[in-house]
Amino acid sequence: MLKRMLKNQKGLTLIELLVVVVILGIIAAIAIPSIGGLIDNSRQDAHLANAQQMISSARLASTSDPDFSTITLQELVDGGYIEPLESPWDGTYSGQVDYDGTVYTVTLSDGGNPEYDISDAEASELNRSQLPIN
Image 1 (cartoon, helix red, strand yellow):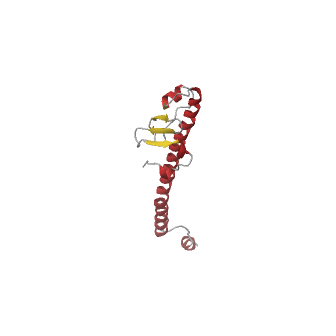
Image 2: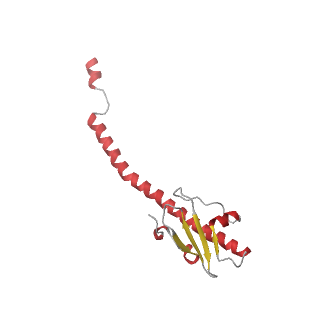
Image 3: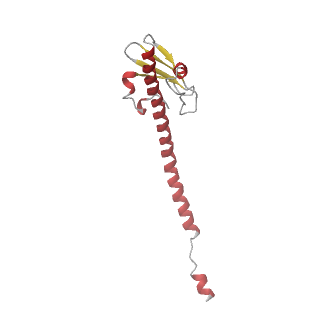
């Protein structure tokens, strides 16, 4: 009876456990870069949304001061036109919006990524693939 119980033990052999570990490793190797790409895309979308929000705030500011041609991000915050923006890369934003009478152009930099310009005409059509950010 004891011999029969020992023969009927069920469980996983060492080889079966190794196969499971290898399969989990392969899945992790595929999933980790995909998750990293999703995070980067989210950051670029947030960066673009911040630039679009600055243009909207500058439009609002221009209604109270029709002679304005340049306004900084800090002036927009101090004037209550926009809440302080947080960079998705944990930097501190600096920037300005220029207005030439027809087009608003925002220049944004967070210190760690390249500075770039977005004009009002292209802001609504701009997508993350067009951002010059690595």
